[in-house]
Length: 69
Figure 1 (tube, rainbow, N blue to C red):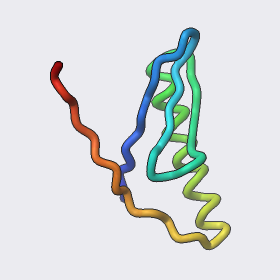
Figure 2: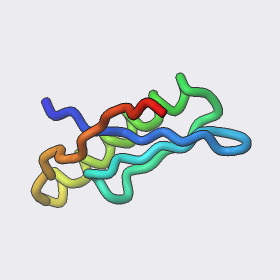
Figure 3: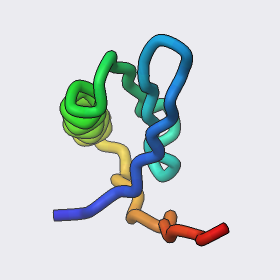
C-alpha cells in the first residue's frame, strides 16, 4: 500500500484537493470530511484507471512538513 501526499486548499465556498504525485487527480467538497472522502475515492479511481491502461503507478515522492511562522 502506498501513501500519497494530498494538498487541501480552502476556497471561498468549498475545499479543493489534489495529489502532486498523481497529475490530474483532484477533488472538491463542502467540508473537510467531504473533501477527505472525495480525494480518497479520486485516488482509488485514478489508480484503477492507470492499472486498466497498464500504466506504471508512480511511487510517492512528495514530502510534507509543517513550517512554524
